[in-house]
Length: 306
Ligand SMILES: Nc1nc2c(ncn2[C@@H]2O[C@H](COP(=O)(O)OP(=O)(O)O)[C@@H](O)[C@H]2O)c(=O)[nH]1
Ligand SMILES: [Mg+2]
Image 1 (cartoon, helix red, strand yellow):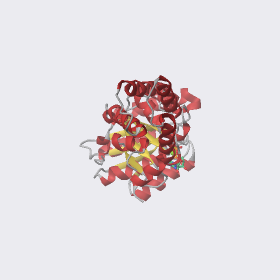
Image 2 (cartoon, rainbow, N blue to C red; image 1 turned 90 degrees about the horizontal axis):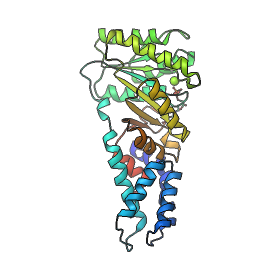
Image 3 (tube, rainbow, N blue to C red; image 1 turned 60 degrees about the horizontal axis):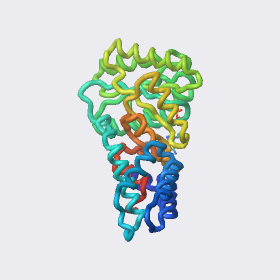
Image 4 (tube, protein in one colour; image 1 turned 60 degrees about the vertical axis):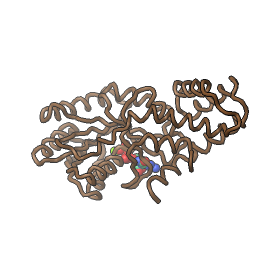
Protein backbone atom coordinates (compact mmCIF):
# COMPACT_ATOMS: atom_id res chain seq x y z
CA UNK A 1 0.00 0.00 0.00
CA UNK A 2 1.42 3.36 -1.00
CA UNK A 3 1.57 6.25 1.40
CA UNK A 4 -1.10 8.08 -0.55
CA UNK A 5 -3.49 5.18 -0.08
CA UNK A 6 -2.87 5.31 3.64
CA UNK A 7 -3.56 8.99 3.52
CA UNK A 8 -6.87 8.32 1.87
CA UNK A 9 -7.81 5.66 4.39
CA UNK A 10 -6.81 7.90 7.25
CA UNK A 11 -9.15 10.57 6.05
CA UNK A 12 -11.88 8.25 4.99
CA UNK A 13 -13.81 8.63 8.20
CA UNK A 14 -13.82 12.40 8.20
CA UNK A 15 -14.21 12.67 4.45
CA UNK A 16 -17.07 10.21 4.25
CA UNK A 17 -18.78 11.93 7.14
CA UNK A 18 -18.22 15.26 5.44
CA UNK A 19 -19.56 14.17 2.08
CA UNK A 20 -22.59 12.32 3.37
CA UNK A 21 -23.24 15.02 5.94
CA UNK A 22 -23.22 17.69 3.28
CA UNK A 23 -25.39 15.57 1.05
CA UNK A 24 -28.02 15.35 3.76
CA UNK A 25 -27.96 19.07 4.20
CA UNK A 26 -28.18 20.19 0.61
CA UNK A 27 -30.20 17.40 -1.09
CA UNK A 28 -30.03 19.21 -4.40
CA UNK A 29 -32.16 22.12 -3.40
CA UNK A 30 -31.45 25.81 -3.37
CA UNK A 31 -29.07 27.05 -0.77
CA UNK A 32 -31.02 29.37 1.46
CA UNK A 33 -29.82 30.98 4.68
CA UNK A 34 -30.95 28.07 6.77
CA UNK A 35 -28.94 25.65 4.67
CA UNK A 36 -25.93 27.93 4.73
CA UNK A 37 -26.07 27.94 8.50
CA UNK A 38 -26.35 24.17 8.56
CA UNK A 39 -23.28 23.87 6.34
CA UNK A 40 -21.39 26.26 8.60
CA UNK A 41 -22.42 24.32 11.70
CA UNK A 42 -21.43 21.08 10.03
CA UNK A 43 -17.97 22.42 9.21
CA UNK A 44 -17.49 23.61 12.77
CA UNK A 45 -18.31 20.11 13.96
CA UNK A 46 -15.67 18.81 11.57
CA UNK A 47 -13.11 20.76 13.64
CA UNK A 48 -12.14 23.29 10.96
CA UNK A 49 -12.80 26.13 13.38
CA UNK A 50 -15.36 28.91 13.52
CA UNK A 51 -13.41 31.35 11.37
CA UNK A 52 -12.78 28.98 8.46
CA UNK A 53 -16.36 27.68 8.63
CA UNK A 54 -17.86 31.14 8.41
CA UNK A 55 -15.53 32.10 5.56
CA UNK A 56 -16.54 29.02 3.57
CA UNK A 57 -20.19 29.83 4.25
CA UNK A 58 -19.58 33.37 3.00
CA UNK A 59 -17.97 32.11 -0.21
CA UNK A 60 -20.78 29.63 -0.86
CA UNK A 61 -23.41 32.31 -0.30
CA UNK A 62 -21.75 34.58 -2.87
CA UNK A 63 -21.33 31.91 -5.52
CA UNK A 64 -24.15 31.23 -7.90
CA UNK A 65 -24.52 27.49 -7.71
CA UNK A 66 -26.50 25.85 -10.47
CA UNK A 67 -29.26 23.91 -8.66
CA UNK A 68 -29.23 21.35 -11.46
CA UNK A 69 -25.70 20.35 -10.59
CA UNK A 70 -24.79 18.04 -7.74
CA UNK A 71 -24.64 20.51 -4.89
CA UNK A 72 -22.56 18.32 -2.63
CA UNK A 73 -19.74 18.13 -5.12
CA UNK A 74 -20.09 21.84 -5.94
CA UNK A 75 -19.70 22.70 -2.26
CA UNK A 76 -16.89 20.21 -1.87
CA UNK A 77 -15.14 21.93 -4.75
CA UNK A 78 -15.50 25.31 -3.08
CA UNK A 79 -14.17 23.83 0.15
CA UNK A 80 -11.24 22.27 -1.67
CA UNK A 81 -10.32 25.55 -3.36
CA UNK A 82 -10.60 27.31 -0.03
CA UNK A 83 -8.28 24.80 1.66
CA UNK A 84 -5.70 25.08 -1.12
CA UNK A 85 -5.66 28.87 -1.09
CA UNK A 86 -5.30 28.88 2.69
CA UNK A 87 -2.73 26.12 3.00
CA UNK A 88 -0.61 26.28 -0.15
CA UNK A 89 1.49 29.16 1.26
CA UNK A 90 2.15 27.04 4.37
CA UNK A 91 3.93 24.22 2.53
CA UNK A 92 7.56 23.98 3.61
CA UNK A 93 8.95 21.06 1.66
CA UNK A 94 12.27 22.94 1.49
CA UNK A 95 12.90 21.70 5.03
CA UNK A 96 13.75 18.29 3.61
CA UNK A 97 16.14 19.47 0.90
CA UNK A 98 19.88 18.98 1.07
CA UNK A 99 21.22 21.75 3.27
CA UNK A 100 24.19 23.95 2.36
CA UNK A 101 25.12 24.50 6.00
CA UNK A 102 24.14 22.97 9.30
CA UNK A 103 20.46 23.11 10.22
CA UNK A 104 19.79 22.36 13.88
CA UNK A 105 16.15 21.53 14.56
CA UNK A 106 14.53 21.44 17.96
CA UNK A 107 11.55 19.11 18.20
CA UNK A 108 8.88 20.26 20.65
CA UNK A 109 5.46 19.03 21.74
CA UNK A 110 3.69 17.44 24.69
CA UNK A 111 4.19 13.86 25.82
CA UNK A 112 3.14 11.03 23.55
CA UNK A 113 2.28 13.09 20.46
CA UNK A 114 4.92 11.32 18.35
CA UNK A 115 8.05 13.48 18.60
CA UNK A 116 10.58 10.66 18.74
CA UNK A 117 8.80 8.63 16.08
CA UNK A 118 8.60 11.68 13.81
CA UNK A 119 12.32 12.33 14.26
CA UNK A 120 12.99 8.82 12.98
CA UNK A 121 10.75 9.30 9.94
CA UNK A 122 11.99 12.84 9.21
CA UNK A 123 15.58 11.63 9.55
CA UNK A 124 14.96 8.97 6.96
CA UNK A 125 13.64 11.46 4.38
CA UNK A 126 16.46 13.91 5.10
CA UNK A 127 19.00 11.15 4.66
CA UNK A 128 17.40 9.95 1.44
CA UNK A 129 17.74 13.52 0.15
CA UNK A 130 21.47 13.41 0.74
CA UNK A 131 21.71 15.08 4.14
CA UNK A 132 24.19 13.89 6.74
CA UNK A 133 21.86 13.51 9.73
CA UNK A 134 22.46 13.36 13.46
CA UNK A 135 20.01 12.78 16.31
CA UNK A 136 20.44 14.35 19.75
CA UNK A 137 18.77 12.51 22.64
CA UNK A 138 17.89 15.55 24.73
CA UNK A 139 14.86 13.84 26.23
CA UNK A 140 16.93 12.58 29.14
CA UNK A 141 13.91 12.30 31.42
CA UNK A 142 13.35 8.58 30.87
CA UNK A 143 15.90 5.92 29.91
CA UNK A 144 13.31 4.41 27.55
CA UNK A 145 13.16 7.68 25.60
CA UNK A 146 16.91 7.56 24.93
CA UNK A 147 16.67 3.92 23.93
CA UNK A 148 13.74 4.62 21.60
CA UNK A 149 15.73 7.27 19.73
CA UNK A 150 18.74 4.94 19.62
CA UNK A 151 16.58 2.30 17.95
CA UNK A 152 15.48 4.79 15.33
CA UNK A 153 19.09 5.91 14.77
CA UNK A 154 20.20 2.35 14.12
CA UNK A 155 17.14 1.56 12.02
CA UNK A 156 17.81 4.36 9.56
CA UNK A 157 21.55 4.31 10.16
CA UNK A 158 22.35 7.80 11.41
CA UNK A 159 24.61 8.97 14.21
CA UNK A 160 23.21 9.73 17.66
CA UNK A 161 24.58 11.80 20.52
CA UNK A 162 23.27 10.75 23.90
CA UNK A 163 24.02 10.83 27.57
CA UNK A 164 22.72 8.99 30.61
CA UNK A 165 19.21 9.34 31.96
CA UNK A 166 18.76 12.46 34.08
CA UNK A 167 21.66 14.31 32.51
CA UNK A 168 21.35 17.90 31.30
CA UNK A 169 19.32 18.06 28.01
CA UNK A 170 21.15 21.24 26.98
CA UNK A 171 24.58 19.67 27.28
CA UNK A 172 23.49 16.80 25.02
CA UNK A 173 22.28 19.34 22.45
CA UNK A 174 25.52 21.30 22.74
CA UNK A 175 27.61 18.21 22.23
CA UNK A 176 25.55 17.19 19.21
CA UNK A 177 25.70 20.58 17.46
CA UNK A 178 29.40 20.90 18.25
CA UNK A 179 30.10 17.46 16.81
CA UNK A 180 27.89 18.19 13.82
CA UNK A 181 29.80 21.36 12.92
CA UNK A 182 33.16 19.64 13.30
CA UNK A 183 32.13 16.72 11.11
CA UNK A 184 30.11 18.54 8.44
CA UNK A 185 26.66 17.27 9.31
CA UNK A 186 23.72 18.89 7.50
CA UNK A 187 20.95 18.26 10.02
CA UNK A 188 20.77 17.76 13.76
CA UNK A 189 17.36 16.74 15.10
CA UNK A 190 17.10 17.42 18.83
CA UNK A 191 14.56 15.28 20.68
CA UNK A 192 13.05 16.80 23.83
CA UNK A 193 10.81 15.84 26.72
CA UNK A 194 7.45 17.59 26.50
CA UNK A 195 6.13 18.03 29.99
CA UNK A 196 3.81 20.97 29.41
CA UNK A 197 2.20 20.50 32.82
CA UNK A 198 5.42 21.98 34.12
CA UNK A 199 5.58 24.94 31.80
CA UNK A 200 8.18 26.92 33.72
CA UNK A 201 10.70 24.09 33.65
CA UNK A 202 9.98 23.39 30.02
CA UNK A 203 10.50 27.03 29.12
CA UNK A 204 13.81 27.09 30.96
CA UNK A 205 14.87 23.84 29.35
CA UNK A 206 14.10 25.11 25.84
CA UNK A 207 15.81 28.43 26.50
CA UNK A 208 18.87 26.62 27.78
CA UNK A 209 18.99 24.29 24.78
CA UNK A 210 18.56 27.22 22.37
CA UNK A 211 21.21 29.26 24.17
CA UNK A 212 23.89 26.58 24.20
CA UNK A 213 23.41 25.79 20.51
CA UNK A 214 23.73 29.54 19.81
CA UNK A 215 27.20 29.44 21.32
CA UNK A 216 28.22 27.30 18.36
CA UNK A 217 25.98 28.89 15.73
CA UNK A 218 24.19 32.15 16.59
CA UNK A 219 21.37 31.22 14.19
CA UNK A 220 20.63 27.91 15.96
CA UNK A 221 18.15 26.40 16.45
CA UNK A 222 17.40 27.05 12.79
CA UNK A 223 14.06 25.32 13.02
CA UNK A 224 11.67 24.61 15.87
CA UNK A 225 9.14 21.97 14.96
CA UNK A 226 5.99 21.50 16.99
CA UNK A 227 4.56 17.98 16.85
CA UNK A 228 0.78 17.76 17.30
CA UNK A 229 -1.42 14.69 17.68
CA UNK A 230 -4.49 14.91 15.42
CA UNK A 231 -6.48 12.73 17.82
CA UNK A 232 -6.23 15.39 20.55
CA UNK A 233 -8.93 17.51 18.89
CA UNK A 234 -9.31 21.12 20.01
CA UNK A 235 -6.55 20.71 22.61
CA UNK A 236 -3.93 21.19 19.92
CA UNK A 237 -4.92 24.86 19.57
CA UNK A 238 -3.79 25.46 23.16
CA UNK A 239 -0.58 23.56 22.49
CA UNK A 240 0.26 25.77 19.51
CA UNK A 241 -0.47 28.84 21.62
CA UNK A 242 1.66 27.69 24.58
CA UNK A 243 4.65 26.34 22.68
CA UNK A 244 4.77 29.27 20.30
CA UNK A 245 5.12 31.49 23.36
CA UNK A 246 7.88 29.38 24.85
CA UNK A 247 9.87 29.28 21.63
CA UNK A 248 8.64 30.50 18.21
CA UNK A 249 7.57 27.59 16.02
CA UNK A 250 8.88 27.43 12.44
CA UNK A 251 6.99 24.31 11.38
CA UNK A 252 4.26 21.89 12.37
CA UNK A 253 4.15 18.11 12.09
CA UNK A 254 0.72 16.61 12.66
CA UNK A 255 0.75 12.93 13.58
CA UNK A 256 -1.80 10.11 13.83
CA UNK A 257 -3.93 11.29 10.91
CA UNK A 258 -4.24 7.61 10.03
CA UNK A 259 -6.51 6.98 12.98
CA UNK A 260 -8.82 9.92 13.30
CA UNK A 261 -11.74 11.75 11.80
CA UNK A 262 -10.35 15.00 13.12
CA UNK A 263 -8.08 16.17 10.29
CA UNK A 264 -10.03 19.42 10.15
CA UNK A 265 -8.09 20.70 13.12
CA UNK A 266 -5.10 21.34 10.85
CA UNK A 267 -7.25 23.77 8.89
CA UNK A 268 -8.22 25.56 12.08
CA UNK A 269 -4.54 25.94 13.00
CA UNK A 270 -3.64 27.11 9.52
CA UNK A 271 -6.34 29.76 9.68
CA UNK A 272 -5.44 30.95 13.16
CA UNK A 273 -1.63 30.88 13.10
CA UNK A 274 -0.44 30.61 9.47
CA UNK A 275 2.49 28.50 10.65
CA UNK A 276 4.33 26.43 8.03
CA UNK A 277 3.32 22.76 7.94
CA UNK A 278 6.21 20.38 7.44
CA UNK A 279 4.71 16.91 7.29
CA UNK A 280 1.85 14.61 8.30
CA UNK A 281 2.22 11.37 10.27
CA UNK A 282 0.15 8.47 8.97
CA UNK A 283 1.34 5.51 11.00
CA UNK A 284 4.06 4.14 13.24
CA UNK A 285 6.49 2.87 10.60
CA UNK A 286 9.52 4.58 9.12
CA UNK A 287 7.83 5.44 5.80
CA UNK A 288 4.59 6.66 7.35
CA UNK A 289 5.34 10.34 6.92
CA UNK A 290 3.96 12.50 4.15
CA UNK A 291 5.49 15.82 3.19
CA UNK A 292 2.72 18.37 3.50
CA UNK A 293 1.10 19.24 0.19
CA UNK A 294 -1.98 21.46 0.28
CA UNK A 295 -3.65 19.91 -2.79
CA UNK A 296 -3.27 16.41 -1.41
CA UNK A 297 -4.63 17.42 1.96
CA UNK A 298 -7.58 19.23 0.39
CA UNK A 299 -8.29 16.24 -1.82
CA UNK A 300 -8.19 13.80 1.07
CA UNK A 301 -10.26 16.05 3.28
CA UNK A 302 -13.07 16.60 0.82
CA UNK A 303 -12.86 13.08 -0.57
CA UNK A 304 -13.29 14.22 -4.14
CA UNK A 305 -12.21 11.94 -6.98
CA UNK A 306 -11.90 8.85 -4.81
N1 LIG B 1 -0.97 5.62 14.38
C1 LIG B 1 0.07 6.44 14.56
N2 LIG B 1 0.82 6.32 15.67
C2 LIG B 1 1.87 7.17 15.82
C3 LIG B 1 2.18 8.16 14.85
N3 LIG B 1 3.26 8.83 15.30
C4 LIG B 1 3.60 8.29 16.49
N4 LIG B 1 2.77 7.27 16.81
C5 LIG B 1 2.78 6.44 18.04
O1 LIG B 1 2.50 7.26 19.17
C6 LIG B 1 3.19 6.78 20.31
C7 LIG B 1 4.00 7.89 20.95
O2 LIG B 1 5.05 8.25 20.06
P1 LIG B 1 6.42 8.88 20.54
O3 LIG B 1 7.21 9.17 19.33
O4 LIG B 1 7.05 8.03 21.57
O5 LIG B 1 5.90 10.23 21.22
P2 LIG B 1 6.73 11.36 22.03
O6 LIG B 1 6.45 11.13 23.49
O7 LIG B 1 6.15 12.65 21.59
O8 LIG B 1 8.16 11.20 21.67
C8 LIG B 1 4.03 5.62 19.84
O9 LIG B 1 3.36 4.42 20.12
C9 LIG B 1 4.14 5.83 18.34
O10 LIG B 1 4.33 4.63 17.62
C10 LIG B 1 1.32 8.26 13.68
O11 LIG B 1 1.49 9.10 12.79
N5 LIG B 1 0.31 7.37 13.59
MG1 LIG C 1 9.83 10.92 22.85
